[in-house]
Amino acid sequence: MDRYKYKAFQSGSKVSKLIVFLHGYNGCIEDVEPFAEMLLKNLKDTLVVIPEADMQSERNPMKKQWYALLDVDPDRRRRKPETSTAEIVEIYNKTGTRISEAAKKMNAFISQLQKELKVKNKDTYIMGFSQGAMMAIYVGLTRKYELGGVFPFAGIVCGKDMLEKELASRPEIYLFHGTKDLSVQYKTLDFTKDWLDRHDIDWEAIEYDGIEHKLIEDEMEDAAEIINRRSA
Image 1: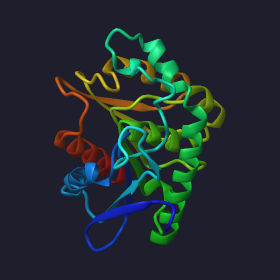
Image 2 (image 1 turned 90 degrees about the vertical axis):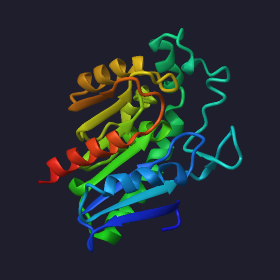
Image 3 (image 1 turned 90 degrees about the horizontal axis):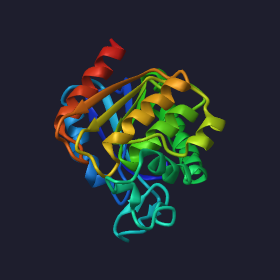
Image 4 (image 1 turned 120 degrees about the vertical axis):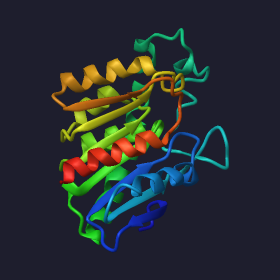
């Protein structure tokens, strides 16, 4: 596969489940590696693949991004507590064309992995943190065949107008969010829930009291428990 640089981590001697884990904005593979290893402590015969975005970050040339944000939110209003949920949603909505193109590339990457590993959609899960969480939602909902589950950590429905046009499947979505998150603001979680309800998409929210914008081990344990439950 030459579409993305990536690292892979495996538990067990065979691959019966595939997890694609997407890093965040201004991020890299190494940001996610420790959490892939936490996941695998509780999963058998699972391969976790961490691709790295192929676009240089507009904030740090040593980091990556899935799509640009700076021009649609130069003052970072999306992160200010006084900014309304409606304005935050509209900021992310402006990136619809960008996230759509990024999601198409990611879905092609996932399909290539599945073909090589002989893993079905029902045994494939996509996860992501922050911008990677937004990608995970978009990828999962625009994929032709339903994935086993979508796990956004600190995300929001992004590019909602474009997503409505491209909605193709309705996998279960598990929304993980810290109550003190001001980067992808916790208050926007209600918008995401409502949007999923309006489009007949089943979801479950797991909220972490006092947690800011970061991944934590408890989330990995809870995600692994869900996957084990779904694949039992």
